[in-house]
Amino acid sequence: MAAQVRRTGNLSAFLNRRVLLGALLCVLALTFALALDSSLAGCAAADGEGETSHVSTTADNAADQTPEADPDAAGVPEDANAADQAAATSARQAVTPSQAGALQVIGSQLCDAKGNPVQLRGVSTHGLAWFPQYVNAEFFNELRQTWGANVVRLALYTAESGGYTTDGDQDALYQLVCEGIDDATAADLYVIADWHVLSDQNPLAHVDEAAAFFGDLSARYADANNVIYEICNEPNGATTWDNIVEYANQIIPVIRANDSDAIIIVGTPEWSQRVDAAAAAPLADDNVLYALHFYAATHGQDLRDRMKAAVDAGLPVFVSEFGICDASGNGAIDYASADAWVKLMDELNVSYVCWNVSNKDEASALFVPQCAKTSGFDEADLSEEGQWLMAVLRGEQPGGDDVTSVDTSPGTSANTSADPADPAAIDAAAAAEEFGSDIVGATGSLQYCVKLRQTWESDGKTSYLYDMEVINAGSTTVYSWNVEVALPDASLQTITITDSWNANFATKNGWLQVSNVDFNGRLAPGETASDIGFIAQW
Image (cartoon, rainbow, N blue to C red; front, side):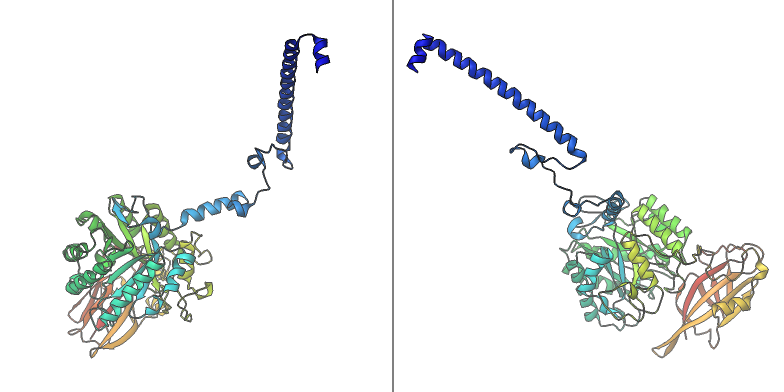
């Protein structure tokens, strides 16, 4: 170092030159590094369409390395079609109490706790007194996890044999309802406690029993966010909307005393079909839904139009019972009408519950008669309606493409045996043979077929259940009809009509008089008013 210093003769100048040289080398090094980084970035970009470059700086390694995509790990479908299907499935998922919380009614919509519209879709039990075995935790879990349902309805018949207000075991039935609510809650389902008015027709007939039942139940489940109270299933016969309002104004305050904001469903006249009457004079309570019931092979466009008009008018409608066969709960299935109903309910965001959870030998039962299971069902265990419903609840395309669908709007019938354009082709004997009629007759140009379907004994009297059709065999359209029927072996001085549907019934001068209701009075030549029925007792 001393020799070098002597050669330069100036230490300061030497150091200055070293500093300048070092700075120059740093600039050159930095320039080279920047050029190299740019080059590598270009290579990485060029490799984007082929094998991914693994060149990266240590600091950027975690962000820049792109391993081969793993669809399962990422939760992303492998192709666009799968993505579309996943989106559709996700959109169809039914919200549950744990997600949506306590429900509320806003305008014509059922909404969650935050005010977002929701739709409940599920199933109704048959009468709890007759099919209690389906109230179990395994099946209710299956409804949510496998079927895609988010609501179950517990049907507590009131006046029938075994009913809550007749000879049924009230304590056992009440406990079964509670077990159903508890099982539904554990399965994360909404649950409807249904006071199943039917043969008693007017809910005022058992208003005191209803008040006691709903008072006890609402007190027990006052803190639940998933319990819905349906206070009168299907008012019928001569029951008016004013009668129902009178009843509701006695029952709703009983529930409100325990649960101020529970959802309550109120039935409407004529087997819960007259939502127009409710729309014209709704109840004062804001958290009320109004029931509409339909059976697709009986109720068509006229009733769909009525439901839409009611919702458009601001009425919150809930289809708390429906089937895809005829109104008797049996008969042919009408897939076309059923699909039209589902399409409209989905468009209007109307909730719906399908009848019925049982293996009863009828078209509306969800399980085939030979199925003895109470959970763990597979496709072979399901009836035609059961298979259709599962597809609907899952958001799949409903079946029925291989089944001839018939427009069974009021005034038409799947059982019409003649071309409506050719009235002369109608033959009463042929129609009777097809219908399996026990009684055939005519009043003017109106022919009728009546078949005895079932009989039973009770309290020393015999009850007779009849199916009936009325055919316009004339050449002009009728806008109302009335036929007179003589029943065999009956003294019409003592006969009592204990129940009826889709027609009005009266006795006069030794005859049973049958006339149309509002939706099936119009019959074009050759058309049939079908799915009429009544229960006579003498």
